[in-house]
Length: 503
Ligand code: AHR
Image 1 (tube, protein in one colour):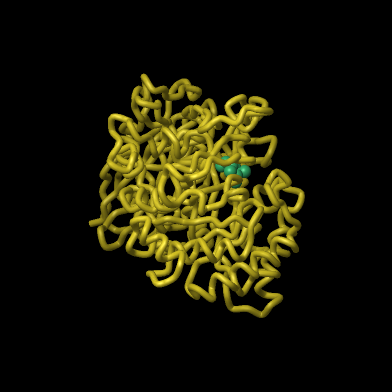
Image 2 (cartoon, helix red, strand yellow; image 1 turned 90 degrees about the horizontal axis):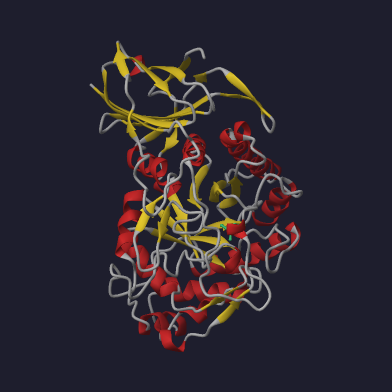
């Protein structure tokens, strides 16, 4: 393998590092809420029933925002069921996940949990079975100080102050035939426009997210965005993108290159949004809320929903176990999100706990980190300041899905005030180490602070409740800097982070 050449220059600024890029997602699905973040009676539970062991891991993960309450769940949700005295809340069928929703956790608990975790809430309204009136009711409940029926109801329920929620998703994946209340692009676009217009009559400065496509493989991808934005352009700020990746039929080469698809997804949606804006002669730019992204093995038994008369409460669902290769892909997807920080203004790793999640819990037992926890936590902690575009000259390799793709991918961030530079890299090669040289001479004097790598000779290793630590980021031996040029060797299937300090 020849040496990959990377240039990091403080002049190549893409835009700011956004805390909202490091968002996540809590849906009423499986054990994400119940026995995930909320488990009254757990040895670590606080007075609200929040697991403090999970709260500690959420803080360590560095999550900026959390989207709630779904997901497919939101398209059948009646938010009123989840507020007021807990013992009077109704149990309901959740059609999305064929489960029973006990409603012992709702909007007030979510907002209290966010405040405790130091997280910005991002809410979704139900545009599947509901519409304008119910969206307005929820907005009033959450954001009006008092003096109206619903704001006073919130106060009576214990929350004197309005909730600090400005980002609102107008429904979820309305392009998907699986969605309760699935709509055509025109039907959804009209409804989203009406809901947005009404919500802005209450709070003009909301940040509203229209539903984009639930994946590039959707037959309506592209045309859906065009039609929805044609209806909503002046009324929304962001359009959503969702993408889940997995290794299919043993095709590791394509799987490790998943970020190529994410790059194309972002570029395609941006171009479509700009085309709509151009046609309208609008100076406004629509941004992207990549509010569901992750590795998800949808065909595995873990994702099989209950059937028939079985409507369990908080079943084990979508509890994927992530290996080292999955973590490398997650790290690479974050690289893609960061390098598009000019267009991607918000993103949510789907999801946060137990359900395709970086954090797992045992009911009554410990909480632990999956492999995917590490690249997210380290990128969130050390990506600071501005994102720098990083030209990479690397060997390519052939993939069945994406053609020839670079073996090495990277992005950098620069915090000029703190004098810190961070470079995030992946080696997508399954078998070969990749030597890398990073040219940092444009910074003048620069020194290496640390280089860490996540890899394992067996990249199928995954963490368990009893061993979540034997594979974790470790120092990358042999990394060294000489006259502004940093040399290192990335092991096969690896994610790495290099931190530097400018003089
Ligand atoms: O995150 C799991 C599910 O994936 C969400 O409920 C839905 O929006 C998407 O299809």
